[in-house]
Amino acid sequence: MPDVVVVGGGAVGLTAAALLARSGFEVELVEQRGLPPKEPGPDPEIRVLALTPASEAILQACGAWQNLDLSRAGPWTRMQVWGETDHDGIEFLASDINKPQLGHIVENTVLIRALHQALQDGGVTLHCPDSVARIESYTSGVTLNLDSGTQLDARLVVAADGVDSKTRSLAGLEWDYQPYREQAIVAEIETELLGEQTAWQRFTPDGPVALLPLFNRHYSLVWSTTRAEALMELDPEGFEAALTEATGGRLGAMRLCGPRKSFPLGRGCAPHWCTDGVVLAGDAAHVVHPLAGLGQNLGLMDAAVLQEEIDIHSLSMRAMRAYERRRKGPVRATQYLLEGFRLGFGGGWQGFRQAGDLAMELAGRYRAVRRFFIHQADGCLDGPRWLRAGEAFPESRV
Ligand SMILES: Cc1cc2nc3c(=O)[nH]c(=O)nc-3n(C[C@H](O)[C@H](O)[C@H](O)COP(=O)(O)OP(=O)(O)OC[C@H]3O[C@@H](n4cnc5c(N)ncnc54)[C@H](O)[C@@H]3O)c2cc1C
Image 1: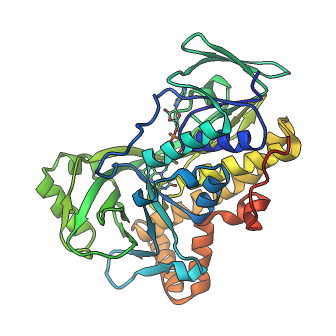
Image 2: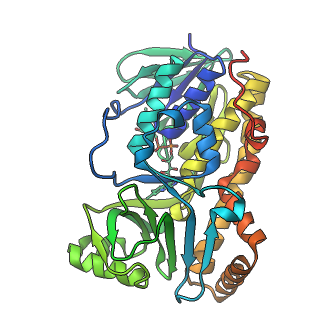
Image 3: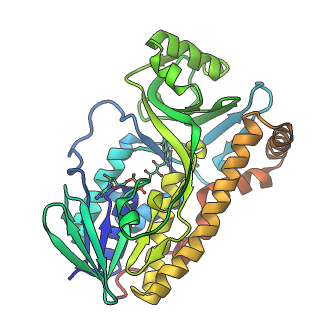
């Protein structure tokens, strides 16, 4: 019988599985989709992730960063954030935190492929494609019945099966979720002007528009907007003109390099993250607005803290509760901070706008304020001890 079964082979589930295998547990993973393709296509994927230095350290610890095709992972050293007028911006620099970069922009499948390689190296058994149909909890563990008819018994189940987590509802854990009126449109974009290794984000009254630098000198667009449906219906030329206007012409004219896709957005957090033999991680536990690109980073930190608490308290309820206590605060704080950004910089109530203007002014003037925002986004201060101390990951103590 495996010690742990992870449900969900997104980046959070794969990272949790790889870390727990590295610390000596027998781990199996269930994922409803097939394996990722062996080779990336020539063009960048439409879904990319901005990963922080803390996430890179966690991926290094689980053996995935070493497998990552770095020719497909663009570093970014500068982030330019501005509001409705061109003069009210802030520039965040890697030098604000004395690092060579603020992070890397990585394609989702490139990351998933590197994590699968780490799982193979760690001897994790995969059930893929397969899905969970039923869960039964006992005092000694949990039985999972998969759609294929396979039955798995485990001491612990990590539910990392995303925002609509079936495992969460099968385990009887509640979900507190508020959809936003905004949806996110993603696409690959070529801009007339270039900003080397720079991420751009403009807050507009109907939502933030972000451009993340890709390996091929194009950008990945994440446009969170209440006008998504109308914008998706525009022909390419109409969409490009609307985007050029939304970015205030800061990067010149915009050109679409491929299809657009839209995603619903919302904010959510499970009131309880664990119950007998089942614990939530990643989007199954919490969802944040993508405006600062933090959802995946928070989930990777969940995986690292969960591994640390299991390392201390073994596969016990005590470990699960300690993990929940440690992660809920930083997740809630991030949700409030992002909400403050949305309301403060995006228009709306006058008081929020004034607070947003003040925050912009302080961040523009003082390096300490910019450092606070960058460290808040990185989340490293809430991480496991080895990460905070800048030490190597402590392997195989079981
Ligand atoms: C437009 C957009 C842009 C974003 N940009 C960023 C960014 O730049 N940086 C960042 O940090 N975050 C970003 N995020 C957030 C990030 O994508 C999510 O937080 C992240 O994908 C969550 O990872 P996860 O592994 O928890 O869940 P998911 O990535 O959703 O993975 C869940 C996995 O579980 C599998 N699954 C589901 N149900 C079952 C089942 N019943 N049985 C078995 N398997 C199952 C799914 O197939 C999937 O593989 C963005 C989000 C959006 C919408």
